[in-house]
Picture 1 (tube, rainbow, N blue to C red):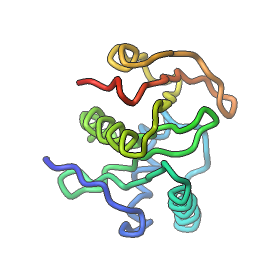
Picture 2 (picture 1 turned 90 degrees about the vertical axis):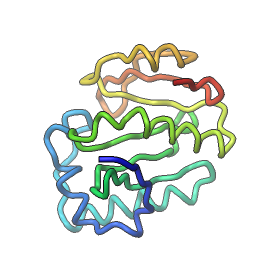
Picture 3 (picture 1 turned 45 degrees about the vertical axis):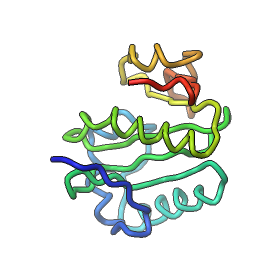
Picture 4 (picture 1 turned 120 degrees about the horizontal axis):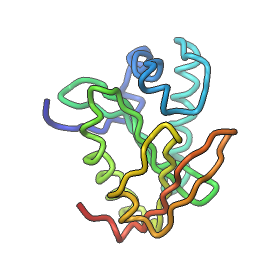
Length: 157
């Protein structure tokens, strides 16, 4: 498996997302929501695509080695902009590369800081903590998160 491609949602069959967003190993690390079906996945994709009309936002499907791995993006957040990475377990080793791409996008957009919320099911990441200007516990939609505030110009390997 090699090569990560970031593809606009308009070029992805919504049904192809269902195994990713409904996978229990992925859902464990997301806010609780009902399982997607062929109607709700289209609505969700439409909402994500509409967020791209906001300056500084970009949402993309992630293909790794030609397979749909999940999605990622920069989207609005109450603190400015947040990054999101949601990929199938078999592709979790690619998270750092996807993160770096998102931070490059953030730099292109001129963001000074980006927020990364990780649900309490995830461990604290030392590499993110080193890069962050601040790390704090936050509650979003009734769930606990570790939130990393990452200066865009402070992203290293």
